[in-house]
Amino acid sequence: MLQFLYVFLMRMGNGTVMASWTSLLALLRESLSLDLPPPGVFLLLGILNQFVQKCPMLEDRRDRRDLQDVTQKLLESCSTIAGSSLEQTTWLRRSLTVIPGPQTDPNLSHSDVEDSPSTSPPSSPPPTQPAVLPNSSHYSVHALSLLAELLASLLDVMFGSEEKERALPLLTAIMGNVTPYLRSHSVENMARFRACSRLLSSLSGYQYTRRAWKREAFELLMDQNFFQMDGQSLSSWKSVVDNLMTHDKTTFRDLMARVAVTQSGSLNLFSSREQELELRAMLLKRLAFTIFCSETDQYQRHLPEIQERVAETLRLPPAPILQEQVFLLFKVLLLRISASHLTALWPTIITQLVQVFLHMEQELSADADVSRCVFGSGPTGPRTLSQRISGIDGGWAYVEGNGLCVNPTSNPHWLRVFLATCKLLDLALALPSDLLPHFQLYRWAFVGEAGVYSTKHSQRQERAVEGDDFTPHLVRLTRLLRRKVPSEDADRVLIWEYGTPLLNVARISSLSDLLPFFNTVCSAQLSCVTLESSPKHSSPARGNIPSVSVPTPAELAVERDFLEQLPGAKK
Image (cartoon, rainbow, N blue to C red; front, side, top):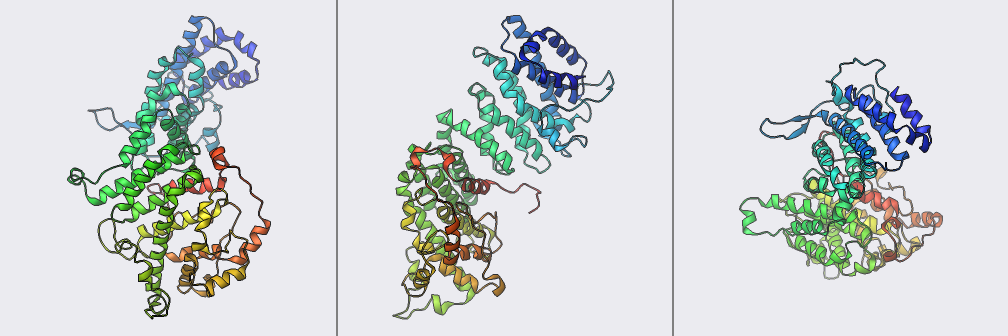
């Protein structure tokens, strides 16, 4: 019957629904007293939402208060079902954690969880069922999804502008059943995590709800496992972080203050050097994500302070965990800050790129045993590698987070740095030249005058490779890598699409995995073929357009780089 009534209300006109208010209120009150199973509660909430959305605010104060009371009881019941997969950790304090085990009811398909409330209750439920069934934890995902869809808009309509404060205790109680799911980053909890992220995203769009979620959201952002989630959840968190930082300027200031962690003696008394580096890398990544969640130039006035944080990081002893996050921050700045404001940052970006590529070349040269070519010391021969990197800190290529010397070509931490470096260059090459005019002054040093993003003829590239004094960095790396791989793999290339970064992998197992990327960007013949069929791109001034004007593939590529692997997930 509830299912029938829900569908009937969807088809009824607004006037007819309004005329049935008295009968509907009696039905809702009676149904709440029956202790219906979870599907029945979902249908009651859906019926209430249909009435609220179709009818204007009730003029009679008593009717309005009755409607608010029924709404609060229904939302509390739904919140109780949503929290049925939580358990108390100790009897001393009310600290809730997720109960291990399956998270969905076998009778509920994935589409049931995502759709509007239409799940049918059992045909003849026993009249004395408890409010929360022993197996009601199977419905927690559905309850959270329903709250994510209805809660924010329902409360906004239900409580007038002068009554918003009355909704805060209810929101705080609901968040008590939501936050524990957001602290659990296991694969088994991901459906609930996704629904809770959507719920928090919908609430964060309303300023009056801020007191109910601000502190918890900031704590979750600072959690070391924050980025262990899927892409859908991260999209929801983009809205949460944007609203968290935009509506309260002190929150971003707090984040910047945390990033400016000093290497003081007092800090070293309680933490090791490796812990300090991990903390700083974690904060840099969260700063990058905060900027990524913003509009173009939203944090432009903070750019000098951001550059200072980067400079402080680069002055620390080199460590791969820091280098990787610095390159991620560079990518975000390319997407979120107008080119005219990035002029002072380009020397730092180029210097870091060159350092890593020279580091890669040094390691490949040593592995390939080509010392005669690279380390030749003849008076008329080319400059040696030692001379080329004489201006670079000698410890840069070898210092690990724990102070030990390792072989970077086989160390996973340095491999992530190499991949992050190539992804930064990949993004700079993929973005239209009018969005990054300053990079065009340096592009030749990496790929030469011809490449996949250039219209120059291939013969010009050959002259640059064979006769010029300087050989582009990626051309040199391509030569060295070709000597390390089997001949059948030496010519592999990646599929190129206009405006789309080439690299979409999350990790590499060796430098040889980067050879297809190097082959592609150094292939002048491929350049002539692809660019003839590519669409013409014309962009207005970067400062006059919102962030959505940045090519979507570039946005998605950077967004994926924030994600971390879930514990227990298959690699």
